[in-house]
Image (cartoon, rainbow, N blue to C red; front, side, top):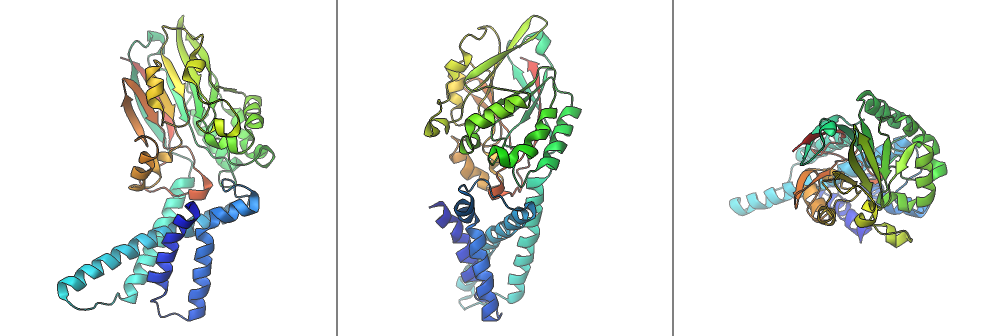
Length: 371
């Protein structure tokens, strides 16, 4: 069904954009075939590599495919808009109208330009985003405490070692008290990504680097990846917690497994298990890759939940669809039954849809404040 749906914009472009142009038939056939291939690049990746989440092809090819794919989507939208306006004008004027070729060329150039910009926005080293979160009862020693929140790095053939090194350098330069990563660090098997994830070992903060798994960890050898994260100096939290102490005061940092886990034979996310044995009077911050079940965390007494997964919806307008699939949560701050939920737009994103328009990536510095 997914592959059929992504083919629809391609068919619109072929039928309503390419077919009416007065170009040689062979050119239109070749372009149509190329566009059909690009529209099915997820399926082709699956057939070639066994997973549509990790295309093991040169980075320039990943960039080019996303550029053409983005152009295809935008061109389909623009062409439908032109068709609707044309139909409206024909009804008003009561005569048949022809869409000029110059208008078709114009929307083609615009689509190419916007798609190139969208790919650039998706693949850049993310800008810093400042966020303040107030916690009632936060101990005084933690007032002003700074956390760098990274998520959805999707280290892959798109986000390779140089990009990871730049993210690590930018993070360390901010000198945070704590670094957390809420899942989807990688796309690919350990041997394919070993060199690209190596720079993560340089992440440094006084209270450490903590990571919880995302759904993509379960696609590529969960056990091997979680062990490798620990070898890189991260403390992994999968239905577990850590206690951070400062001047005699405690802060609980918990992390749970992903909703995908039970489908691959691993334990389901369990907030109660993660908090078992934690100090009862300390504020709780929960790392949960997906924001979908935030109400469960709130009911368990969590003060702050940090999530990712949605990539912020990636494109303005499309974020409304992404929100519907994530229980209404897609980007930014939410109050969930008295708990603060922060959904990060993502440090990177899945290479299969590397487009951002109006929903920028972020390297997030969270400052805790007393309520």
